[in-house]
Image (cartoon, rainbow, N blue to C red):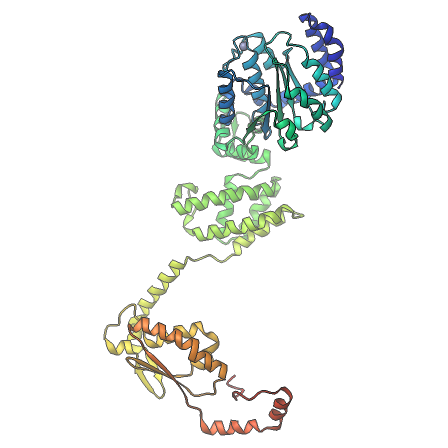
Length: 562
Ligand SMILES: [Zn+2]
């Protein structure tokens, strides 16, 4: 506010005198509003040396924002320059840099041009942030309605020297709602010589009324590949040797922000000197590198819980951020899964036994990670949460693909069949008969099952009927199969055997034998035992139970047999 008050108080009579106006603006910049901004800039300069040195100066230098740059340059070429813009997007994606480049493009002595000369006074002063007609306002410290009123007063006067009077409002979402309302009219119908550029990381906080009067440009996250390419170019120019793994750690930590990536590179160079190793970056940034991911996967694949704990201890000693580690390990697992599916052994370092990893295992691990990641974020201790997830992976049973299981079963059957051909007999009452398959041919057909095997398979699907079925007589012939029971079968069980079980067995036999097989059931109950059991029905205790609960006796079975 004081900054704008100052500009107001002195700038009006100074419009005719360029030199005096420059002095006024110099005064303005020494006021609190500007002071705070310049302190911020000083901070950036003090440690963001690379970020400052490599700040894009032309549209061609801006990385990862092709759609924005193409639209801007096309509109400049066509002379269709809008009077107000919103540059929205993540921090460090080039919003303010692009705003300055646009200012240069408009105010360069050769302009408006898409290739500002970078040599004229306007270009030079805009680059240094001291141009008399380009106002960089930090909305965080000039957010009130009074500040905007002052700004509106400045807007009234044409530029002192340049073609356009340009207002770059940084962190524009910080303006108060009254300030936005005050700005509304100015933004809607500014004088032809005024251009507004509102830069913001939170475009949703800009009122719709303002947004609808501006051209909105969304600055996207810069793709990791492009950040890495730029970092490599910087490292080469700065004559610093950086390991590939180190680049990848920095790029991941920057999360799509070029400025963050450059600052991190600076930080790591300060730590390591002109040779930056992956381990150095890991130590400085508290992020585990690829080596740790490979070690962890190896320990999981080998079901080595001890190695997992030792590795996590080591990471804790290095002050690793476990949540970031978990996220990065997830990305690594995904890449490893792709490598396993592609059968790309080069993905893994030398000595790593990738044959222990199946795609099914990797999917299981990824699934466990995805399902537990959210709860890890809210855990009171991230190390414990991560340890739990990883140990679950260690102790999870290896998943065997169904196709492998089936082929194993087939090979087992093939191996056991010659033996079964000579020894496989079916108990049939007091007689032993060779199975129908064997009597039909000396050389058993590999795929065909004997009726008994078909029967046994059907029994597996009806495990609750097995106590009754396993002791039954079994008499197969070409087109019939007789099953005889020598015990009391409860009515419900009998219905199930003669219903669902018979259907299933009939289908399986027809498929196996190649023709329909009649199945019949017979029940031979030992009459002596039966008459003894019948007497039990007259037992007073049984009668009392029947009187109390109603119903009837369905079956009487020996307790020992149960
Ligand atoms: Zn120029």
